[in-house]
Structure formats: C-alpha cells, structure tokens
Length: 561
Image 1: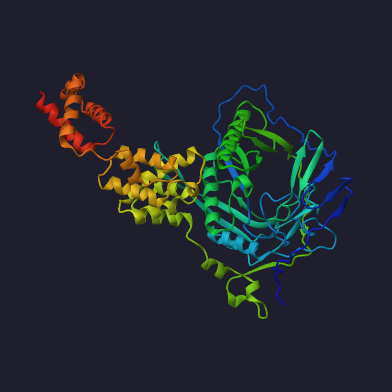
Image 2 (image 1 turned 90 degrees about the vertical axis):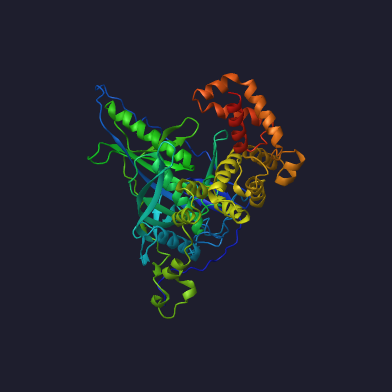
C-alpha cells in the first residue's frame, strides 16, 4: 500500500449553504455569483508610528541594508490544491467554490498531483534538495476569508530546501556591464491560498469572495542575501522568467499570481542584523524596488537620529512612494501549528524503480521524469543567443525580459539575410519603444516579424536609407500592417535618389549656402560635416545614401577652396 498522499482530483458541486461562525457571531451566506457579507466587521488596522525620535544628537554611522524575500507563486493548474474546483481569474464571485473550499463539515482534502509536480520542477530548476518525504500542517489564524480557520501548509518539512537563484544586474554608466549575483533559497513549500476580502467602508461591511480559496501556492523563502531594492527586483524578475519557462506559474503580478513580501533591516557591517520590518503583498517589480529602497532609507534615518526601529508589518503606497504601518509584530503570534490529520506524508520518488510495488506509477511523483521535462532556462537561453547570434549579453537580457521578444527576433532573422547585430537594434529599439509607448505586448504588435524582415531587406539592398526605413516602420505601425514596406516606399516616393547629377547639385547648393560651416571644416572641425550632410538629407527628404552624400560634399568643399 502506497504511503503517499492521494493525488486524484475530485470535483465537488457548488451549492447554497449557510455557514455559522461563533467567532464572528455573524451569518455568512454562500451562493454562486454573490459575495459573503460580513456586517459590522471592523476592517481598520491599528497604526504605529515606528519612528520614535530621540533627543540624542545625530551621530554619523555607516549602515547597510539587508533584504530577504518571501514569494508566493500561484501554481498554474486547472484545479485547486485540495479540491476539484476550477481556477479562473475574474470569474463571478463565489462561482468556483466546492464544499471543501467552503469548509463544510465532513469534507476532506484530495491532493492535486499537478501542484506537487510544479513545486518539484521549480525546486529542480533552482538546484534545491528535494525532500523525499514532506509533511502537511495546519496553521491556525482567523481571517474572514479563511472559512476553516486554518491554512494547510508545510511548516515542519517542506517539499524542497537549500537551493540557489542565480541572477544578474546590469551595471556601468550605460548599463552594459553584467554583474552576476545569487541568493540562497531556504525552502519551497506547498500551501493553499485564502479567499479575498473586499472592504466597503461606506457601508461598514466586508464582502468575501472564495473563488481564490484553496488555490495552490508555492511559497519560496529566500535568505537575506540582498542589500537593496535593485537586487531584489532583479532576483524576482529572474524567478518570474524561470517560472514562466517551466510553466509552473504564469507570473502575472497584476492578477496576484506572484506576490512578494520583503523583510528589510539595516545594520552596521560586521554586526548582528537589525530589527526587521516586513513589507507585505507587493505586486509589481518596480514597486518592489521602490518599497525596499524607501524602507532602508527610513530605517537608516531613524537610527542615525537615535530612534528605534519597530518590528512591524508595513504596506507600500505606490502613490506616495512610502511604506505605511499595518500591525505590530513585537509579540510572538501563536499559529498553533499541528500536523494535518487528513493528509498522509507526501512522497517524492527519485525514479520509477524506487516506487513501491503495487503503486500506480502514473499517480506517483517521480523526480527523474520531471527532470527530463525541464525546458531551456533563461540563463541558458541568454548564453545561446550570445553564442549563436553574436549579440551583446545586455541585448540578450532585453530580449528575454519581454515575453515573446526572443521568438520575434529569431523569426525576423529567419526571414531576412541581415546580420543579427543589425536586426537586434530594430527589435530592441524601434519595436520595443512603440510597444512600451502604447502599452502593448509583443503579440499585439501591428508589425509582424515577416513585415519587419521585408523592410530590412529593402534597407540591406540599398533601396532606402536608414532614416527613411524608420519613417516607413512608423507608417507600417500606424496602418497596422495593411501595406507592405515596398508599397509604402513606392506610394510616397521614398526610394533612394539615384540621379548623381541631382545629388551633386543639392550638395553644391548646401556648400554655397553654409560658408561659415565650410570655413570651420577647413579649419579642422570635422563635426561640421554632419550638419552639412543633415542639410542635404533635409533637401531630398532623407532619400540619399549617407556615404555617397559624404563623398560628394568633400569633393565640393575641396573644389570651392
């Protein structure tokens, strides 16, 4: 008989039910397409200053920040962790709730195999040590959106421990120097998510939606190896790319699929770590960096003026760019952890041979099989791009940081004969600038890879100049790809001027009308030639080959001497 937890999904119907809570002394009505209503529930949290000032004279001291992260990644699965309820974003309130999700008496958890495999794959990608036997626990605390009054998690023995996340920072004045970094991953544990409370202050009530209750989470606990917001943001972005490559988490932070808690403290180098604060539920990488940097500076200011940093939980206000106190953490909270009695130990087997006789291998979690399914990870992809196409490493970072941009770049390369280093600028500069300007993703680009390739072929063949090519690209974007590059060039007569006599006439006119610039050039100011070339291009609407124009200008200047 297998000792591992059952991993068969079991769907349960959603039906109307009346749930009574003695703690709240309120009646919560659960039915599809409605919210729980908790009338009269006080949703205000006590506020703490956290910045006690001392009359002690400010003493300069050298301080440095220390940052650790706790990251909750929503597992990409069709169903929840312990029930057969579907997982969908923006579904009608309380429409994806099973009897178990609502914690009705007599319901039992049934572990979702997909969630376990996602955690193991993530652990393998982060070089963690997989615990062959892990345990589930109950963590007791009261939230209105936690019907059972406890969360099923892994406090004693998580599924994986002792990993490492390698990431990089782009340093240097131009951001072209790659600085390798790493942060230790203390553990990865499986747990279930809670529901969602929506506070209606005007009516003095709280609405509860249990669609999210029971959704599978991976909590990744990282050691305090980082020193600033930039490092934390880079680490989270790298983790996000890894999870997306694995398919274990979609990583959409705006939908709450990746939520970060930052533990921040400051101390003097060489001394014990200082009192830490926890900044909760940051759902943007940009805001993560800002919140951490603000909190580090806030604590430094307090200590330098003789104040006291309080151990508290804080939230980040993106509008003001500050962290605000939520609740005190000075007292030790008793979660009353206890073993989960309804789930046996979770077993992860190294290979098929280690699966006990009589156990269906299809229902077992086998590390060797999952290791074989690991895709190309971001770090490997970057190295491949650099080695295969000869682009700079910082360009590889840019390509990988935008979902779908690597595929777009490689499709353009496949359709054109241009060198990768000539294509990369168009993808990372022209295309990416317009995408960001209009807040679009790569898949929404009006200009397809094949259309860009046709434009670059015209440029490579010498049919248009580089400045005209940029104008044509803007026009292709504006028309949403309705016309090809060749059609736009033909209709607007944007092809390169091939009439040598016309070019000589224009260059001669420019030389005659700019005597001061010509005199400065003859005196040794080589930069003036660029101004003269710009005047020529303006006269013929950018339709001249810069190399040809330069040569003719030099001839005209020498002849007029």
